[in-house]
Length: 158
Length: 213
Image (cartoon, rainbow over the protein chains, first blue to last red):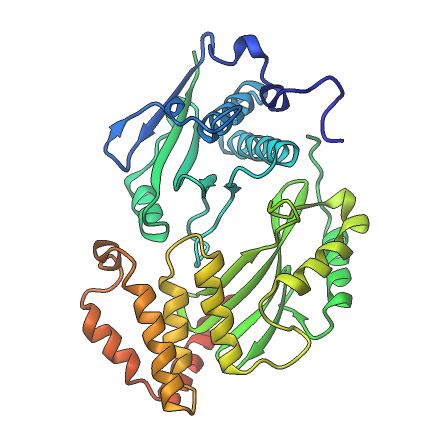
């Protein structure tokens, strides 16, 4: 049993309260779509039922950002691990959504946060006000995983 | 999510447990990779440190003819899948209860029989299966391995057939992406096509000096 009893909905499985799911008071989450060269909302991708893949990834990052406090690279790693485990748990409970954590390139130089293999989208969690996706990282992803849209998810402090 | 610091004893024990199930493989240095070498490739199992609480078994194959700096490059890198189609990850605390199932799955899902010595043709077939079914990123490195390995075959027909299959797969990559790696595609292809087994052996020896799997 992965979750404590009483958790029944997909949203709750991610540990997000229904009432807070669509409003992140005081906290900002942005999704930038670099591959198409413009900012776009990740909420536009609707799955057959429950949360869309984009929402699952976004919520997992959001929960990690809220629950693990602090700054710096160690905190960043912990947040990534937390969010990764959230997604694993969700898929274990509700079935595979094609969300693959920590996919790595052949030479191990690029390790993706999440590859949405159903929609060909790479999600990259960026926690903190100064976290950005560099051009080098973008080009690396583009070479190793061509034909995938790259979406950095930016989580900012209030 | 409780953090667990994994001691080297625990990680050694995990590697040893897997080695008992796959006696034909050998631990590479003190890493978490259990490998076996056949001609220009090294293949086996990597017990990837996944998150701080667990590891993921992967079926890996490295092409010794192609290195990036001193890093060897995989031509097969496949994560074990469970019956739900999800990646198998094993929590350190649950290793004892779950690793035997994972070993059984690995034997079924690895496209190569670890117990026997695989031929070059079997290795090429395994790479092509990976390209067809499992690859998530660019097939560039896997295709390159097939092209290089095909030069070792005796049968001219098979040599060309495998080589051309790999070229067909490469042609599916958008040209502007390929150009990030290769400047003149056609002459690059011809250079590989003309490689002889002796030349390949020379490349392998050079790479072995600097390689870090």
